[in-house]
Length: 487
Image (cartoon, rainbow, N blue to C red; front, side, top):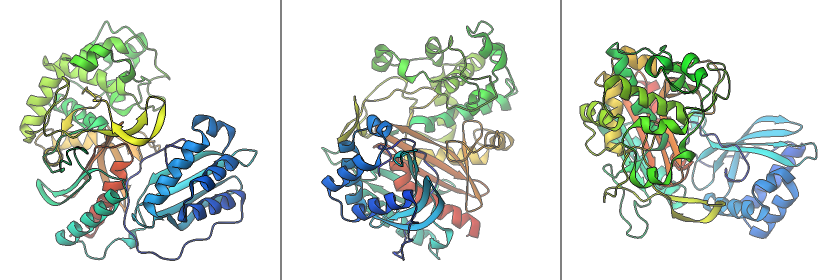
């Protein structure tokens, strides 16, 4: 079942190729019986049969969110692309729920799959997300040459199945040791994708804001514990002004919400010159919860952090990022994207989301504009340089980078692990990877920095999530394992 069909989609780190082995048998519980029937249909997809299964097994609430015909069509497309799934392991089984580790027969992409039934034994919730394979299934040899072969093979499979259009690059320091691309920068012209092809990054760009804040902390101009009122004494919302700290903005614990949907047609057409120009879209909003008491993803919080960069530095946020992030890192093909523009180096973003929901065919997505919350433009080659500049102290001090990459709060989050200051944090085979992902119609990206190693993985896709997971998380698994083996 496609992630679009049934509710919550969470991207976790991981993916890998796998040799075919014996499938696990699902238990004789109601969830096990329901999924046994679905996997059998997926092995030999038939649209009418999948539509009947969907109508019979989904709850009324789930079908209202997305009718049976559309869900079945997604299932049919997915099962055709993957040639079905092998059930590797049942990881949890209860009377009303089941969770399984599965792998695409043709793609080799590993995923976690779970469903929950309501009181009428109908599927009310489902989760489907790429994940790491069993560590023992990884290749025995992980030389540069072997990694390049593995990556090329994996991207070819994912691309041929229509599950990835973009590029994955693996680097040691600033040297790219493996890179593979699939799909096209533009479908019509069949423009190839390279390390210098420009992609919109989505929320991956939050890392630029974190680095900017880190620089000002290094200069002792600000502290992560500073209240918003220190920078904006007249900030309209009193709770935010007095109770929210800079650190809360970066950890999504401020209680602030979103602002992207409030951007005006003029902003989207002509751009925004300063981060502070976004403030009227959210500065009167009351927090969703007491600041610091919970966590909820907040683009408005990162936008406000960018406005603080402006206030303290005296420079417009886009100018600051160009001068103090892109230039010292050597990112010559990157842009804050605050003013819409066309460039022959840029990909065309493609989405299957239409005005009324998921659609059957790919279409060109609407262009985004950049802000401190994301949307900047960069390339695989430039992001390798950015990661190395962060790691080596070129952008922020090593001590501050450690602060940015330190987990804030012990709970597991919807980011697929823990969270620092505008950085996702995840343990992979005992190794720690930090970075950030971005997801938007036609945008699916991720940057991974494996700590205590020189390795970086960049994943850029010009189609909907979870394209980045489908294409790049196997590379993350390879490099986490290589870092663990110290070779």
